[in-house]
Amino acid sequence: MTALVEVKDLAKTFEVSAPWLNRVLERQPRRFVHAVDGVSFEIERGRTLALVGESGCGKSTVARLLVGLHAPTAGELRFDGQDTRSALAGAGARALRRRMQMIFQDPYASLNPRWKVLDIVAEPLREHALVSGPAEAEARVAELLQSVGLAAADAQKFPHQFSGGQRQRVSIARALATQPEFLVCDEPTSALDVSVQAQVLNIMKDLQRARGLTYLFISHNLAVVRHVADAVGVMYLGRLVEVAPKGELFARPRHPYTRMLLDAIPDIRMSGRARTPVRGEVPNPLNPPGGCSFHPRCPHANERCKSERPAQQSIGGALVSCHAVQERRI
Image (cartoon, rainbow, N blue to C red):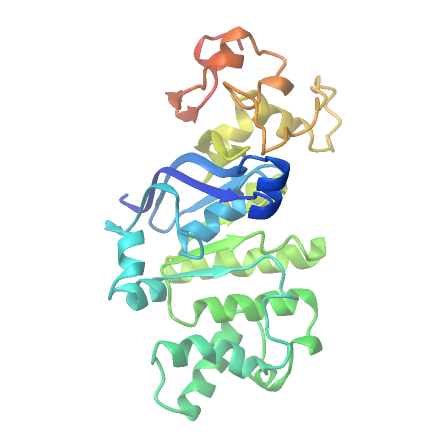
């Protein structure tokens, strides 16, 4: 299969300095956060890559970089062979935006409370001139709502008249309006009850099968990831520490951080296997540790881990950034 999305050495730095006058008076340097720090991956057409990791590791920043909501500081982004950054800055921006859409995390915040669902879902149709008049827009919105399990009559309601799961379905219908090939899903079920999460995830899986959609699915819930993903990327402090097919990652996690995340899942079967306790806290991203960023929390760290940043290497079908794994110490 060919890769629809290619990301190479992607980086994004945000300045978080105090105001200029404060810096001058207090003699403070400028301060920067490396939210995304050299991330590389590919997503094959019709497949789902999930990004997982603790809060603040850069998952949502990657999502926003892919759809052009942030401009990358460095690195390459390619969509269907074309450079995304130059395409979004040029005449082809409208055509490219039709092909990629985003589903946001919070359905309560991502829908305009003053608009009816008809206007919310029809907005991208009108923006991209995909409908010629109000009647055609209404018919198309009815089709989209029915495709996500809502009724055509729901188009006349306001967002506050829906439950959280129904609002997220409206968000999905809006994202599907331009008939995109690639959907970036930024924790689309994290604000929902568990029973509703399953309904929304099943709808997304059905839509992927029916329309051949490609997903980047961002989550911190490994049970959700196991249900939807084909491959999984594990992020820590802005870097990808492991990328592997889903079955491989859950059966044979290699990076110590991946093992720690999997050990944190409650053992419902009570198998009695040894579990590694979670050690320490995520370091301050304003002052990240040198070498491997995970070494302060890693039980296998040595002097090399503290001084040298590990390169990503292919090990048994997985891409792993870890000296201990590469040296076969674990």
